[in-house]
Image (cartoon, rainbow, N blue to C red; front, side, top):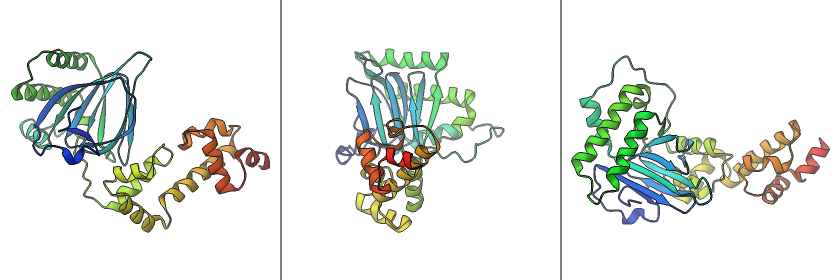
Length: 288
């Protein structure tokens, strides 16, 4: 993948200082990736062609299939890319662009004052369904990228302009929501958002710290100041509280709930439950 635009945290220190204002490139892989740490230095359109993709920011997550595509704002996120079927591949086309490009677009093409901005929508991404025009637009990018000649800066600008104009006219309420998420905000708020959004997700404390743009030690220190306990202990207690409610209120077994509580295997869930409640999930159900 193009390191100047999108890279794992290990690659971040080696990224070149100068980035093209607009880049268009294809990406494909035969490998499954789970929660890869990615630092987006630019906004990114991700057109999924084959496979499944999920993205987690500090405050929200999204999953898409090839009938959809994403617009991601710059910042830290976790990406998972999966192959849909045996023998398949993960394929996508990506367009990255600077905030300056977007600001210039809005100056030249101001949105109608009749378009109302939706409230309480601070997600750092937008999801679109592919229609006939967008499907053909993505195909046109694919044909351009399979040639031996690189796309000129002017052609990249024209294609991005075409896409933004179409979205502005057909999805005005969504183009209004586009913004670069500002991580220079209250660090305590970012931590609260990350914890609330990911309390039942399979995610490590290290990954939560990454999403909050903090070192692990800083994250733990600030977390302890807010919640008066460690991240691991707090998450464990909250997950086991919910586990107890699920076991008590319904007929579901431990084997039916451990995945939705953020555990990858049943034995780990049973061990955690016993650590908090002193008995196994089965014993807890029998006692209630």
